[in-house]
Amino acid sequence: MTETLDFKTTKTSKSRLQETDFDNLPFGRTFTDHMFVADYADGEWKNFEIVPYGPIELSPAISALHYGQAFFEGIKAYKHADGTVTIFRPDKNAIRFNKSAERLCMPTLPEDIFVSSIAAVVDIDRDWIPTQPNHALYIRPFMFATDPYLGVTPSGTYKYMVLIGPVGPYFSKALRVKIETHYTRAAEGGMGYAKAAGNYGSSMLPGRKAAEEGFDQLIWTDAKDHAYIEEMGAANAMFLLDGVLITAEAGNTILDGVTRDTVIALAKEWGIKVEERKVSVAEIIEGAKNGKLTDAFGAGTAATIAPVGSISYNGEEYFLSDPKTREFSNRVFQTLDDIKYGRVADTHGWNYTV
Ligand SMILES: *Cc1c(COP(=O)(O)O)cnc(C)c1O
Image (cartoon, rainbow, N blue to C red; front, side, top):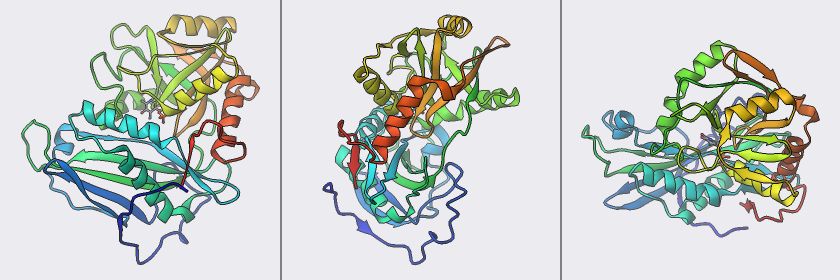
């Protein structure tokens, strides 16, 4: 049991738990009975509170809506067979939360408040955590600007909130992905390393176009030449090429993913060489052709490990090995699963017990 701060709590008068269909949990549509709210004004965070989940009242002039001062995090909590509830590496998200805040000229939140607020709302709704295989509780902390002012200037007031909801598996099959050579997700000096709301708004048109062409996901490339692989949708792109785990260097245009970091740590422990460096489209396509690309996947909290089935580039589709036969990503997936659900010892201290 970890020490948590005490927050003012208003419990719902009527739980929706019984009427929730736990056999049908599409990502991001089901929310639990409670949420966390806090306000920032006059230079400090205040009004920390757990309240029933539901609509909130805001001015239509809030600057988050007009100028995009808004960002979020994504974390998961798991229920072990013995009923223990753990959150996976929330300390890493706390650090990234504040990096996003700083990039968007928004106030940071003390790490202990971030972690305690999440733990508190998970705790009150712990009966909502699904227990089927590959299911979890998704945690969405976010912050947005609330000044009702149309001047293009940093807001003086903000809201921090945490929503949580049960989720099933994100992707059910190997992905057909396309290397994007026109649109850009992030440029040097931009905000690619922040989980800024605007990054996802700008990804929707390219995402829809790719979907219309029959692709499940995009692989983003660098803004300048479209010659280097950056990320895969809202996950980090990782490859096993000639026995070496390669992925783009985090920071700047690449989000510093917690799953990415975890995969790298495991690979190193297993004696696999890891290179965080520029990953050229050319070497990946070459590896797909000559069979040296033995694994390719997206790594992220929502999708965990999402295997790539084929990569398309300039109208040519390159098929990779059957995901079921891939040694590395299956081992990573299994190991991560065992740690998160408490089936093996958490020797890294990655599980935060609620
Ligand atoms: C959230 C996200 C990731 C994955 O990060 P995790 O911490 O592993 O969930 C990777 N890339 C982008 C662009 C993301 O938004």
